Length: 561
Image (cartoon, rainbow, N blue to C red; front, side, top):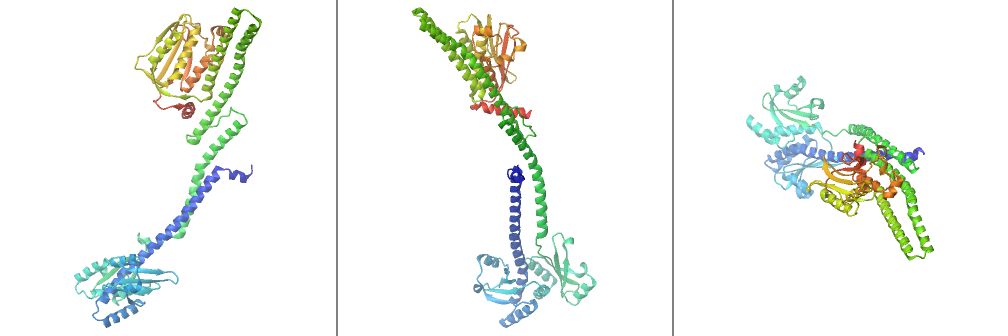
């Protein structure tokens, strides 16, 4: 088989390829999700950062008494900020419902445009009918310093220290970072930064990620009109984009590790399936002696155990079929020959009494053929695994008494002794097949007993049992396993004289198998003849169970053991 064909039909390649496709799809989905989340995060970051600054501008506009002062202040603010502030009617812009909700919450709206790159920032003024807007191409240090100036301008309307602190606390709710008044000596500033503060310059401190677990940030130190006091704005967190290169590297490493793990998991599975495939190929070529190695305790191992049980069952069926075919040809020959002889006698004789006698012989042989065919059909049905077991609670006392009555009705000069348990003892079994077992054992004992047969039943240690024993000659220990072989006769002439076809005990043995039980034969300690015993486990009362299901349960138990 070529390499390409091997890869095409390899379950490992298909499963592993499918997992790789899934991993790639997951990685692509993760990338798209990350981009979407980042867009939402950066938009929220822009609007949160802008809200405080534009609130200060709107407050500064509100502090102006006249329209001329208002325009003059707004012109100065634009020069300081580096971008032109405008006031527009709110209806002229056209805001969405979500943007209007942000205005209702006192927040700022940012509309970011990618081509060309700029952002339009809007903040609703206290009159509710107009908005303050500005276009920003990029955030610069000039704008940061302008925000500090706007803050100082706002605080200039509060004369006392406590009022300024209260105002800062109020403004902190509008900003995405804290605003505090602190002593200049409490800050770790170098000489250059101290000198700049004395010159009323704004100092910006950068704090790296390595020293800040929350990410990179800046602090804005603003000199105040209070001696030895400064206003600290921040830390202001800088937006932290997910590092794409690191994410891609982690995805690739994760896929590699997943691939190794999947390979480690799937390789044993493929090996087990290959072993089963070898077994299937052997069976297809006619080798029923093959046994697949059972490895582990997973579903494939159970499949291997079931496969072994199946091949053994098929082998047994084929051997049984061969035995049945040979035995049938042998067993049918005698009654057919007798019928042919009787027919010839009918043709040759004119005596009416002789004709009636030959007719009776023919009827007896036909009855014998019917019995043989019935036995063979029963045995074949049990052997091929098709019977349905209608499990129910069987009263053993009633069943033993019924078999005793039926056996006595045959009119044999043999004493039939029943030894049933008490009336409350029951066993889970198929009553029809259990009756057949006891009846066949009793019929077999009846042929060889001299005076007495004892039929017993009961339940002991979770197992039910039925026992039939007689006072005949018994069975030699070396021959005890042979009695369950179809058409087997230990003493051919004696068996023919006593009747039977050699199938009764074979049928009993197969019923015991489908009951998940066992048959045994030994010497009766009380009567001295043969003692046949069948035992089977007590099973929960269930619905109809097929014999094939019992075969599967047996293979599972042999696998577990």
